Amino acid sequence: MGPYRGGDAELEKREVLDKVREAEAEVAVKLEKAKKEREALLIAAKQKARDMVSAAEAEAEALFKAEVDKARSELQRQLDKLRAEGDKGTAVARAKAEMRIDAVVEQIMKEFERSVDV
Image (cartoon, rainbow, N blue to C red; front, side, top):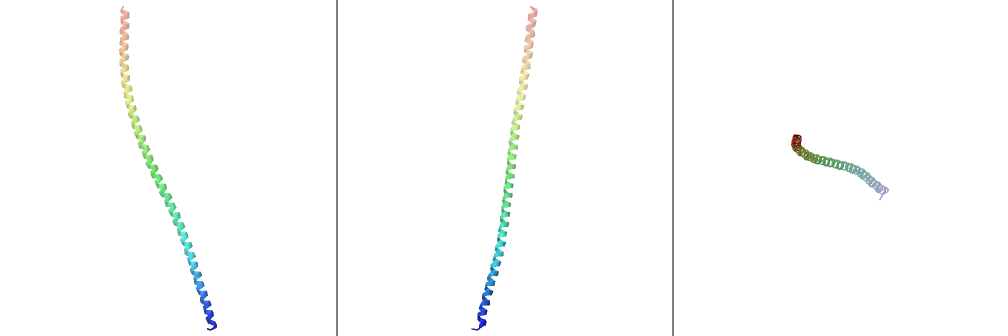
């Protein structure tokens, strides 16, 4: 073994260590890139989830509003029907009362005429 042989081993050792350091650096870069991609994916997924929740809330609000409007329309229809029936009943009662008033006035006039004829 000559003096160069030990030097070759030292050189070989350094080359292996350099390659290990390069590989570690590449792994660190790839790991950092993967972390950034993961973070970006999480941010996008959270935004998509917020958008989906927002869309579901908007749809639920629209359905609720439609049901409330439908119920209001039905209540208004029933109220209008009751008012119409009430108006009809009032008109009938008024007509009957007017007929009775005419009859009462006629009876009072007859009584008055009889009392004057006496």
